[in-house]
Length: 394
Image (cartoon, rainbow, N blue to C red; front, top):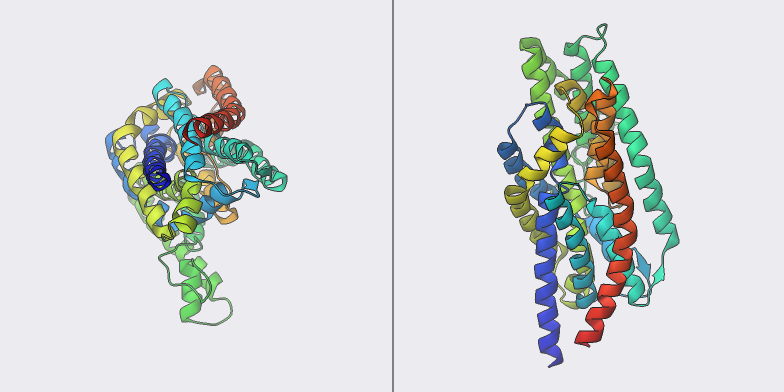
């Protein structure tokens, strides 16, 4: 009887993880393309298709760090059981589903982190205040950093004394240099490492000082040359090309950070109790994200693209550049983040560069309120839900 209950809980937890990943694909993986849609650089349906593919690839190649933090780094002294994982995932999914159908983006990182803290405490675990402080500090810095960088970038792009055939390619060079140093599991790595960057791989092939710097510069120069050629042929088409490319790399990054919110609660169950490889769990999350992006993303894409600010292509680029930088920093540090938080802050910052008329202050205030309510209430709901399920099933 105990074995039957165990496998039943494994099945329920796995299904719940899939549903959570689906919700992430529809909700939190959508904002990277919202500025591009708002600028009419790409259609909603095409964006949803690309989000699914790119976010799934990001989940498989960059998803491990966040998954480990969510699964084992939020409480001490306890292991997340199948029942606890189910309770945490159900809590997070309920919050995110509400966000999808209400039109107000609920931050997945807030919902999932709060839910898993609540579940861990309900299991009898001890809070890890150092981790909480690190995560909360990062979250608090996201709006001013993302919005501030977007504002400065948009202001520069609007200056008449900086040609767009120079300013936009320079931004492309920055993005290209970062891409060269993104850690990926599919890139051959040194012994003892699980991930490596393209620049790091070049250093493995040519073990000389400064190879990483040279590889980074080559990526930056190549990106600059490609976008400069496009902008010289047609400024508008070149800018829109960069906007779509930028949305693509941010969508890829979103999959790498967001999949851990669905797979993290299942880490102990799959790797420790079932003895299965982590890549299988990440693959499960990638499938869910792919389905959610294709089926559920269009509604939220339109909400974030049209309602927060009426952006042109230049301010849209300004919204995405800091989003990409912050996302990769969070992945490197293993910090769960909300792409709603990052991109919306960037959208607002870019919008303010052209005046506040295009920004809905009421919508912004309601959204921030939802963020705070989500974090606090998800802890409470996760705690109570696990206790309730444990009382019924054990």
